[in-house]
Length: 198
Image (cartoon, rainbow, N blue to C red; front, side):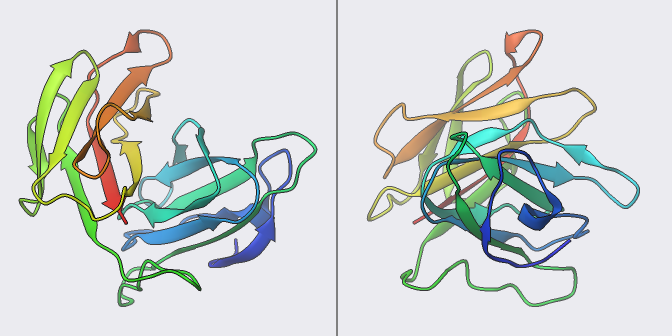
Protein backbone atom coordinates (compact mmCIF):
# COMPACT_ATOMS: atom_id res chain seq x y z
CA UNK A 1 0.00 0.00 0.00
CA UNK A 2 1.28 3.53 -0.73
CA UNK A 3 2.35 5.83 2.12
CA UNK A 4 1.98 8.74 1.60
CA UNK A 5 -1.02 9.17 -0.65
CA UNK A 6 -0.24 12.10 -2.96
CA UNK A 7 -3.35 13.63 -4.54
CA UNK A 8 -5.01 10.25 -5.18
CA UNK A 9 -8.39 10.03 -6.93
CA UNK A 10 -10.94 8.01 -4.93
CA UNK A 11 -13.43 5.58 -6.42
CA UNK A 12 -16.94 4.73 -5.24
CA UNK A 13 -15.47 1.68 -3.45
CA UNK A 14 -12.38 1.29 -1.24
CA UNK A 15 -9.29 0.51 -3.33
CA UNK A 16 -5.61 -0.14 -2.60
CA UNK A 17 -4.71 3.10 -4.41
CA UNK A 18 -6.58 5.19 -1.80
CA UNK A 19 -5.53 3.12 1.24
CA UNK A 20 -2.60 3.20 3.67
CA UNK A 21 -2.41 -0.04 5.65
CA UNK A 22 -0.29 -1.87 8.27
CA UNK A 23 1.85 1.03 9.55
CA UNK A 24 2.35 -0.55 12.99
CA UNK A 25 3.08 1.54 16.12
CA UNK A 26 2.61 4.71 14.09
CA UNK A 27 3.19 8.24 15.27
CA UNK A 28 0.03 9.63 13.69
CA UNK A 29 -0.17 11.63 10.49
CA UNK A 30 -2.49 13.88 8.52
CA UNK A 31 -4.97 13.91 5.65
CA UNK A 32 -6.30 16.47 3.17
CA UNK A 33 -9.51 16.14 1.10
CA UNK A 34 -9.29 18.50 -1.87
CA UNK A 35 -12.60 18.72 -3.75
CA UNK A 36 -15.44 16.35 -2.73
CA UNK A 37 -16.62 14.72 0.53
CA UNK A 38 -15.32 11.21 1.24
CA UNK A 39 -16.06 8.28 3.49
CA UNK A 40 -13.08 7.03 5.47
CA UNK A 41 -12.26 4.31 7.96
CA UNK A 42 -9.26 3.69 10.23
CA UNK A 43 -7.31 0.49 10.86
CA UNK A 44 -6.13 -0.38 14.37
CA UNK A 45 -4.24 -3.32 15.83
CA UNK A 46 -0.91 -5.08 15.83
CA UNK A 47 0.65 -7.30 13.21
CA UNK A 48 -1.73 -10.03 12.11
CA UNK A 49 -4.79 -7.95 13.16
CA UNK A 50 -6.91 -6.33 10.45
CA UNK A 51 -9.53 -4.41 12.49
CA UNK A 52 -11.20 -1.40 10.81
CA UNK A 53 -13.60 1.15 12.29
CA UNK A 54 -16.95 1.73 10.64
CA UNK A 55 -16.79 4.42 7.99
CA UNK A 56 -17.45 8.07 8.73
CA UNK A 57 -17.98 10.98 6.35
CA UNK A 58 -15.49 13.84 5.97
CA UNK A 59 -16.01 17.08 4.10
CA UNK A 60 -13.43 19.01 2.12
CA UNK A 61 -10.52 20.06 4.33
CA UNK A 62 -7.78 18.48 6.37
CA UNK A 63 -6.94 17.13 9.77
CA UNK A 64 -4.80 14.77 11.81
CA UNK A 65 -4.58 10.98 11.79
CA UNK A 66 -4.47 9.90 15.48
CA UNK A 67 -1.39 8.11 16.86
CA UNK A 68 -1.57 4.29 16.83
CA UNK A 69 -3.84 4.27 13.77
CA UNK A 70 -2.20 1.68 11.51
CA UNK A 71 -4.11 2.54 8.33
CA UNK A 72 -6.68 4.77 6.64
CA UNK A 73 -8.87 4.18 3.61
CA UNK A 74 -10.94 6.63 1.56
CA UNK A 75 -13.80 6.36 -0.95
CA UNK A 76 -16.17 8.82 -2.60
CA UNK A 77 -19.12 10.00 -0.55
CA UNK A 78 -21.00 11.18 -3.65
CA UNK A 79 -21.46 8.46 -6.27
CA UNK A 80 -20.16 9.44 -9.69
CA UNK A 81 -18.00 12.29 -8.30
CA UNK A 82 -14.25 11.96 -7.84
CA UNK A 83 -12.73 13.06 -4.56
CA UNK A 84 -8.98 13.65 -4.37
CA UNK A 85 -7.09 12.91 -1.14
CA UNK A 86 -3.59 13.17 0.27
CA UNK A 87 -2.55 11.45 3.50
CA UNK A 88 0.42 10.09 5.40
CA UNK A 89 1.09 8.01 8.52
CA UNK A 90 4.46 8.28 10.27
CA UNK A 91 6.07 4.80 10.57
CA UNK A 92 7.63 3.54 13.82
CA UNK A 93 11.04 5.00 14.51
CA UNK A 94 10.73 7.96 12.16
CA UNK A 95 10.50 11.51 13.51
CA UNK A 96 7.04 13.00 13.66
CA UNK A 97 6.18 15.18 10.69
CA UNK A 98 4.42 18.52 10.75
CA UNK A 99 0.67 17.96 10.40
CA UNK A 100 0.50 20.29 7.43
CA UNK A 101 0.07 20.31 3.68
CA UNK A 102 1.02 23.05 1.19
CA UNK A 103 -0.73 26.30 2.06
CA UNK A 104 -1.38 25.30 5.68
CA UNK A 105 -0.30 27.49 8.58
CA UNK A 106 1.27 26.56 11.91
CA UNK A 107 -1.30 24.88 14.08
CA UNK A 108 -2.37 24.12 17.63
CA UNK A 109 -3.03 20.51 18.66
CA UNK A 110 -4.95 18.86 21.50
CA UNK A 111 -5.17 15.07 21.75
CA UNK A 112 -6.07 12.42 24.26
CA UNK A 113 -7.87 9.22 25.13
CA UNK A 114 -11.13 9.11 27.10
CA UNK A 115 -12.39 6.02 28.94
CA UNK A 116 -15.97 4.82 28.44
CA UNK A 117 -16.94 6.18 31.89
CA UNK A 118 -15.77 9.69 30.88
CA UNK A 119 -12.54 9.66 32.86
CA UNK A 120 -9.38 10.74 31.08
CA UNK A 121 -7.07 7.86 30.17
CA UNK A 122 -4.34 9.92 28.50
CA UNK A 123 -3.91 13.70 28.39
CA UNK A 124 -1.35 16.48 28.66
CA UNK A 125 -3.80 18.52 30.76
CA UNK A 126 -5.16 20.49 27.80
CA UNK A 127 -8.81 19.39 28.18
CA UNK A 128 -11.47 18.20 30.61
CA UNK A 129 -14.39 15.83 30.02
CA UNK A 130 -17.95 15.63 31.34
CA UNK A 131 -19.98 12.53 30.49
CA UNK A 132 -23.45 13.98 30.00
CA UNK A 133 -25.41 10.90 28.88
CA UNK A 134 -25.14 7.46 27.34
CA UNK A 135 -22.36 7.67 24.78
CA UNK A 136 -22.19 11.46 25.15
CA UNK A 137 -18.94 13.20 26.13
CA UNK A 138 -18.50 16.98 26.35
CA UNK A 139 -14.83 17.95 26.00
CA UNK A 140 -13.76 21.44 27.04
CA UNK A 141 -10.37 22.75 25.91
CA UNK A 142 -8.30 24.38 28.67
CA UNK A 143 -7.23 27.08 26.19
CA UNK A 144 -9.60 27.96 23.38
CA UNK A 145 -8.46 27.65 19.77
CA UNK A 146 -8.09 30.88 17.77
CA UNK A 147 -10.23 29.32 15.03
CA UNK A 148 -12.49 26.27 15.10
CA UNK A 149 -10.36 23.10 14.96
CA UNK A 150 -10.79 19.98 12.87
CA UNK A 151 -11.69 17.14 15.26
CA UNK A 152 -11.18 13.44 14.53
CA UNK A 153 -12.40 10.74 16.95
CA UNK A 154 -11.87 7.00 16.74
CA UNK A 155 -13.22 4.33 19.10
CA UNK A 156 -10.79 2.17 21.05
CA UNK A 157 -11.25 -1.29 19.52
CA UNK A 158 -12.42 -3.81 22.12
CA UNK A 159 -13.78 -6.54 19.88
CA UNK A 160 -17.24 -4.98 19.49
CA UNK A 161 -18.11 -2.95 16.39
CA UNK A 162 -18.35 0.71 17.42
CA UNK A 163 -18.28 4.11 15.84
CA UNK A 164 -17.57 7.62 17.06
CA UNK A 165 -19.49 10.57 15.69
CA UNK A 166 -18.81 14.26 16.31
CA UNK A 167 -21.68 16.67 16.91
CA UNK A 168 -21.31 20.45 17.06
CA UNK A 169 -22.83 20.89 20.52
CA UNK A 170 -21.19 24.16 21.52
CA UNK A 171 -18.59 26.63 20.19
CA UNK A 172 -15.91 24.49 18.61
CA UNK A 173 -13.19 26.95 19.57
CA UNK A 174 -13.79 26.02 23.23
CA UNK A 175 -14.82 22.37 23.02
CA UNK A 176 -16.61 19.57 21.23
CA UNK A 177 -19.25 16.95 21.97
CA UNK A 178 -18.37 13.41 20.92
CA UNK A 179 -21.14 10.82 20.69
CA UNK A 180 -20.35 7.09 20.53
CA UNK A 181 -22.67 4.32 19.47
CA UNK A 182 -22.87 0.66 18.57
CA UNK A 183 -24.85 -0.67 15.60
CA UNK A 184 -27.08 -2.84 17.82
CA UNK A 185 -27.64 -0.66 20.90
CA UNK A 186 -27.48 2.90 19.59
CA UNK A 187 -25.79 5.47 21.83
CA UNK A 188 -23.48 3.52 24.14
CA UNK A 189 -20.49 4.27 26.34
CA UNK A 190 -17.27 3.64 24.41
CA UNK A 191 -13.64 4.58 25.03
CA UNK A 192 -12.17 6.72 22.25
CA UNK A 193 -9.13 8.66 21.05
CA UNK A 194 -9.47 12.16 19.64
CA UNK A 195 -7.34 14.89 18.12
CA UNK A 196 -8.37 18.53 17.70
CA UNK A 197 -6.16 20.67 15.47
CA UNK A 198 -6.45 24.12 13.94
